[in-house]
Length: 159
Length: 186
Image 1 (cartoon, each protein chain N blue to C red):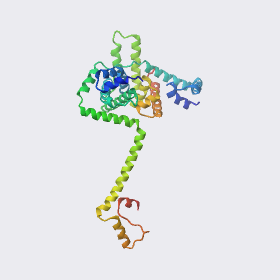
Image 2: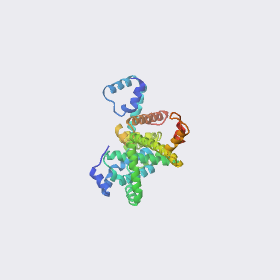
Image 3: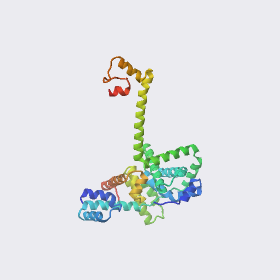
């Protein structure tokens, strides 16, 4: 095991007690022969002990009464909106990948629908149907193979 | 993570303040400790704790027990504390002055050697935490103070396991770098 891999494990799984069996033995063997990695492990263990020695805090006296007062004072509308927002936030963060995929699909669908709607709208504004335009093209001697342009934004973009 | 009886949660969800007080008694210390860990400011930690319990009270009706109550509570606590810290930081406010606070507590005549050591540890922890960003601080307090495992941390913070691991690594790298530069850890 090299120092880079060992350091990676020391910073996480080793100090958090997640390493077991062969992996742990291998890391300990490396620590036995590498003073730098050993020093790092000791520093992290010492920091961990400091956190454990630090006392848990008690919520300030009287806070319960402030909470009760706020609960009884806050308007119902505010509670409902806040509740909805809190739930949306909670569920969005739990379903993040699925939500991203779904939102992307919805946005793409929306854009495609909007483009199609705009293109149809262009025909309706002139009061001339697509068949009328095709008829005019053929009357003017255009063949099936020739390119024609209905003047829609999508066509202007692609043709 | 500690849990509380489902019946207590259901009673509180129906507006039973005695049941809600049981929840407060069970978790207020945890919420305040976590909030203080993130904000490093007594006033902010108090504000966050108040906000968290008010939010919980109003949202208990919507709690569906599809995750544990603790996970839900820790999650609201972390989000609230980080938001309050950010707002406070934007307004340019400082952390709690721990040295001053400690001097006052240590000056008390009945402080034992054990209490003195614990207060000293708390001051050192505060100094270390001030040197990392709030997301990393959240990871460190959940792991080192609350003792959550990686999976629980991922659920609470709403991030993948690998992100938990990398945040912990970066946070600890920063702590070690700070100690090596002259800050103290032991």
